[in-house]
Amino acid sequence: MSTPFLNPKHRLLRRTVRAFCEKELRPIAGQIDQEARFPWEVVEKMARLGYFGIQAPVDLGGAGLDAVSYAVIIEEVSRVSAAIGLCLSVHNSVALYPIVAFGTPEQHRRWVPDLAGGKKIGAFCLTEPNVGSDAGAVAATAVPTPDGWLVNANKVFVTNGGIADICLVFARTDPSAGRKGISVIVAERGSKGFVVGDLEDLCGMRANPVSSIRLYDCTVPKDNLLGSPGQGLAIGMAALDTGRIGIAAQALGIAQACLEEGVRYANQRQQFGVLLARHQAIQMMIADMATQVEASRMMVYRAAALKDQGMPVGLAAAQAKLFASEAACTVSDLAVQIHGGYGYSKAYAVERYYRDARVTRIYEGTSEVHRLVIAREVLNG
Amino acid sequence: MSLNSIVCIKSVVLSAPDGVGRRTPQNSDLNPFDRPALEAALRIKASLGGSVTALTMGPAVSIEALAEAQAMGVDGAVLINDPSLAGSDTLVTSRVLAAAIGRLTPYGFVFFGTRSADSDTGQVGPQTAALLGVPFVSGVKQMQPASDDWDITRRMDEWEEVWRVRLPAAVSIHPMAFSPRPIPLAGIAQAHDHMKVQSWSLADLGLPADRVGLAGSPTRVANLKKVKRQRTCRMLDGEPREQVEALVAYLGTKGLMGS
Ligand SMILES: Cc1cc2nc3c(=O)[nH]c(=O)nc-3n(C[C@H](O)[C@H](O)[C@H](O)COP(=O)(O)OP(=O)(O)OC[C@H]3O[C@@H](n4cnc5c(N)ncnc54)[C@H](O)[C@@H]3O)c2cc1C
Image (cartoon, rainbow over all chains, first blue to last red; front, side, top):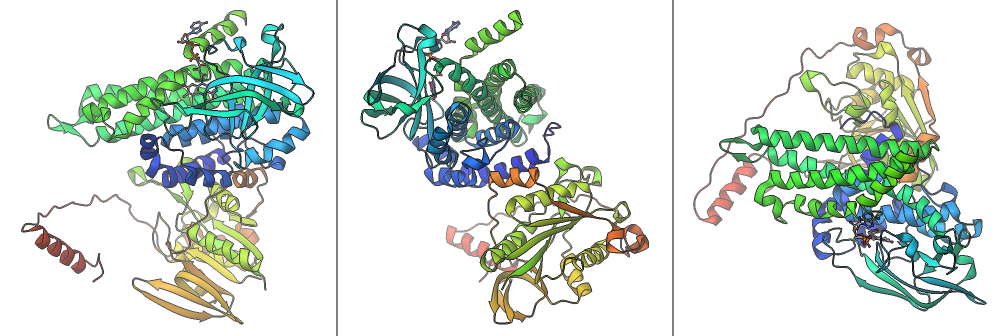
């Protein structure tokens, strides 16, 4: 894989992360998927090495890396275990990043060092049973009281939900203000009324403890409001702009893994007296896979590079997320096809990649919603 | 007691299609045998204080190997890069390294990997030590200060030897002995954003051009080709126990398994 955009820092980063993941995650990646187990033993090592504060400022305990580095890290982790890539992507870009970007210095001191050091895990709680793509319809409420915010929320599909300590909860603070009446309240696990629901029994990403989080008359300190009242959706959208780079990088990592497995198998299995790789039908698949992977990579790194240059990144990130997630599904499908029946068996990793790839078209905005966003930008300029 | 160490590292080529190993960034990496050497030096620094300097001779791409050493935690990095060094063999490499080490005094230990992943001679460490006139212990797995001296344990197959040496000394580190630390992400950002590599040319070392490069090298690579090893398969028969015994005996005669 030749990547002309990467500078020496990114190359060292890729080698370092790849070596770590091969050593620590590869041996357990299939097993944690099957057991739906969050691998604390590896996650704690990652935390010490800075994986939970990739872009957070150094003076707040982060690694101080740029967005391209972030994309490289998520890609490499997801290449081995997409579920752990998901954990990092959500923690770094939609939990920690909004606190860094919108928090007060006091909020930085309270939350960023613990999050960046991985001592606490973050989550992003927007989706509700009846609120998915239409984020403006949030029904959760946060009512100001003399003691702080009285929050009632039923949040579902919370990535990292089962282990999260610090949750960004989208709740309505002004019932009459529609989309402008939603705010972000930071709720901490352990507060009275903070309940972690059952884990979802997912198709893929099974090592991530995705769960519901419910707040029943939970009183949250007044200072836990992130940004200003009514700024919730704006914060959410800003977070998702970065988040999309993470999910796109995750899809890229899965697709890369599928390509590697496809090539490996094609060079090993014989049918009709020759290697699969000698059959033209298989060669066509490999060519399509390699091209999709490389195109995804260009789009992901481009979006990240734009962000590093301080350019608007919304459109590029949305396009990267749409393209890379669709590509990951195509490529994983082809990887299974190359493996034949074995690709449909848990004996081979592509079976897991196939399941993991599927959700990248759904979360942090479905492909359909991304097309809406892209079309709006392209049509309105 | 604090101790300054120098670790000689190499940026190796990863592949040589058509017999040519191109020194591009994509095709280069820090010699894996040097990571344990860096680790050993950093551990001594952690327990005794002092400094660790990474030293490499090579083309500009070797900066990336120095950056990795910095990300691991070394204090200083020196690159010896000069067009006239192209084609240097192990003797010249040792001559150049010894000249550079002469400028990095005072030092206690010079560390080497046991060998390089792309040339595999294992000559540079001992040759450099000989040129410096310091004792050299190879395949080291443990280093203990012992009053004025150091006890250095080296590993060879199933044996261990302990040597007592007086500093300055040079060692090559057994590849299995010091498991290199995983690199923290912040270290990578630090290493690149605050790169502090000193770049030295031949003139800085006071070496004439005819003593280095192809001109100064008594040996040169005449040809490089990939060999494909023939794989053979031998079926063992008999009861499982007999098969296991035959296999163990075979591995024993090949020296692949201890008795
Ligand atoms: C594993 C996993 C992890 C998740 N993690 C999180 C998390 O951490 N935090 C969080 O808040 N949420 C999370 N989600 C929720 C995820 O973001 C939502 O599932 C997603 O936004 C879609 O919402 P929905 O499932 O309600 O689908 P719906 O919005 O009901 O959509 C159903 C279908 O209708 C389409 N559709 C909807 N509206 C339109 C429209 N206007 N035009 C065209 N088509 C449309 C959709 O594209 C989709 O195909 C997670 C989901 C999963 C599966």
